Amino acid sequence: MRCAAPPVPSVLGKGPRMNGNSIRLDVALDVGDRVPLYYQLAQALSRQLRDGRYPVGSALEPERQLACRLGVSRNTVRAAMAMLEQQGIINCAKGVPHTVAGRPAVLRTAG
Image 1 (cartoon, rainbow, N blue to C red):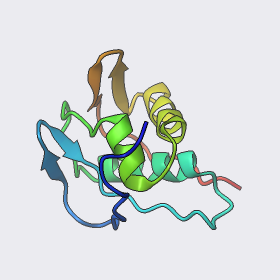
Image 2: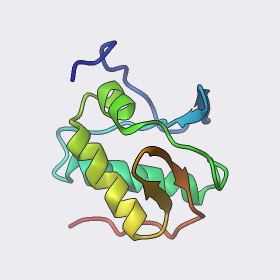
Image 3: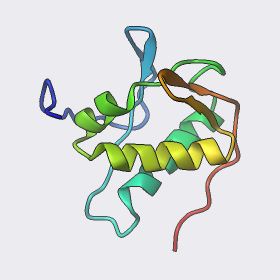
């Protein structure tokens, strides 16, 4: 799938922005880091959810859109979302947007 627009870098620390009916996630990934991109993404989202940046029950940005915007594969985003779902941080169901489940503990740092 081709992106409708080139990826636009985001910076952590900005507030949530609505994108239609979903929240546009503010995330920056470091491709030079030894930590896998999916793990960086999961950590960043976990931290933002823990801090209460996104209300419980809010719909998150679609996987394809997030992958396109961050310049990563959809599989990278899926791996991060699966990790967050497994920990009870977000709710995932086929055909509907992922939603915020609650305020999780921070993911452990890799290494």
